[in-house]
Image: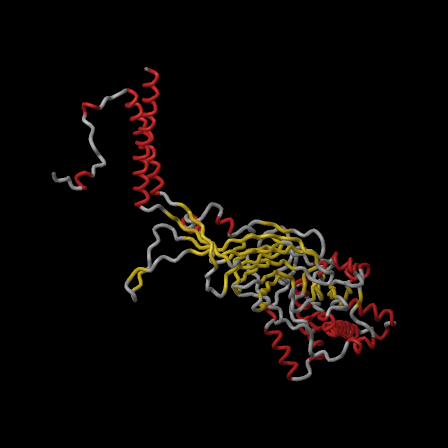
Length: 526
């Protein structure tokens, strides 16, 4: 007898005759439950299949860029734009007074930003002393001091008795002040000579006693040239808001009219004084004393062709150096822009410095507001709305954790230092981004991942020595580990496997439940 082939004997779906099947109410209920269970699980599995999950990966940073961009917008609450500078330091080198891609806007003491942009003065273009003054300060003092030394009491008297007062607030340890001293004394001598000439032109001068002559000199003096040593009169200089040495202030009728910021030569000083007198009295006033002073200064100091060329060169750049006629006591500065720094540990700091002044450390306040600080290419508003879909919640805030923070120092010789751990982060572009076609190779290039930088930050209040000018410092270090985010979804075969497991598993479990219930109920009947 021939045996049946193996394939003919293989039957996993043998049929039971319909006559042997018996329908029950319990089977109907359990079948309904099984169908509902399979339907719910099918819908949930289908939803999970069409959705995606955000996957986080860690790897060594493969970024090959040599530099990284730092975007910033920082308001210095009590530091003039003239003194606010940015220096960048890294293990690969130092950049001092960075001005490229940096804008400065003056802020008044009420916190209102001025509508004009501050010129980024490098400040070495200002002549710091008059090279045509060849005498030393000792030689000029041999016949007495013409620049009047003032203290708080005599300063008030000088303002009351003189229409115009020009004062040099200096420190005896300041190198710029020592360089300026002969020029300032020469200016005072020029003023005395101008007054002397006017007195000598008076018809009854020969009848004057020595006391009358000196009084006449005081009356005819165009401007009182004074000086205040801020080392000896520390509190008085603080009351005058002297932040740097030398500071040259001009007073008219007892009121401050501005800080001189031009070339520090005798001829330029006299031009400034003449302009201030014209502004005060009017250009058509009959008795303009300062106009004669410039002629005396030129006669005294311009002797050679070289001196003449030197004076012309300075006067040609005079318009670049504007003076503040009504300076607030606590001006601020908003500094914004971006820096390109090396991809190496380093720092950038905002500090008060000047090529033409020595800063008073105790008067330097670097309290600041960080309006914005981030690394990398800045995000557009559209990108913030659409391009961050493939990043976790709170990702944008992690790239700019300093935004809106205020750091105020309440004591002298203090400053806040900030420490930033910068982490390279890559993520997939938004949906719908078109691929770029490579004409050379004849295919579409895969989409490049978007790159951003997350920041882990901490800040602390640092103390400085009394002779060191404080600075707002931002120290950064790039993490060697990069983070990447990618959206992942399930494969189609995984989906179908799950569907089969749902159908077979539900059928099996419900069948086992029905068999158990049937067995228990049959025993009870017996």
